[in-house]
Length: 349
Image: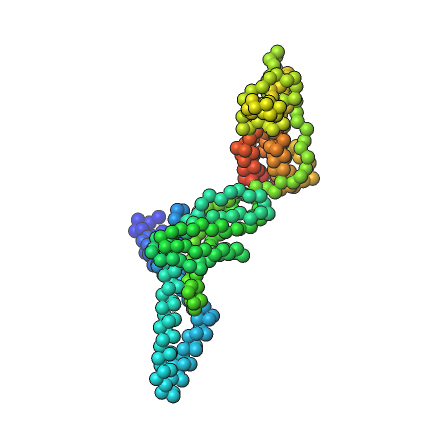
């Protein structure tokens, strides 16, 4: 590098001094981002967190096909009125033109200054539709009528009252596991006469977790884990009956003392004692090698749901993660999340 601030390239020639083109680029970028045409064609570059305010700069409006035909009809009416000197023709032409202008104002006002935000979305399985909940808030003292929210092939309608709010569910297909980001949503309206279409683009920073599609394969046999020394383990296994204890939400329905419940003694769980306990391990490496990765993850997802329904204590082994045997909705969700976000190593790709 030379002392005069110039930079030599690979061929040894001096480049432009620092601060010329590099300083112009951010200014040009900021100028372009203020342009309506740039924002219209470029759209949003990244999802936005929090509530999105539809300011005037973010709302675009153009005539619809009916609006273009209406404008051409007004031009023909004006030409006819001038040619034949029709006073009533002038009145009707300018009356309809004023109606069109008022319609354009109401169309624009029906969309501008809305707040759009997204709520948490529930996880789904591959092949289902993730239902993103979008919240619309109207801070003004007039109603917002005939709003449409579209993304891809999905479209839902919404009406928001004066100083009120509304929540809509926008379904989006989930073709693969992992995180599904909400695509760019077009909020539009053609109220009141459908002569103009006003729209804006929003993309809230919300995503849905997509689990692998579970298959219906039967559960593998559980493994007997012997105790060490002379210790005797107590649990909800299948050995000798040891007594009753208060019911816990994670207990299996198979071990509830239903006779005691019928006698009005409350919810109690049967406790068994033995010198060993059964643990159900769901291991990715133990699956047949003929299955590909997605089929293996689908089988493990089906086993997780099956084991949860049957009340087993089950664990999950993946190459990059191990979850100890447990039971309950939280453990089930942790296992399904680990399957959804599993990435194969370089050797398995």
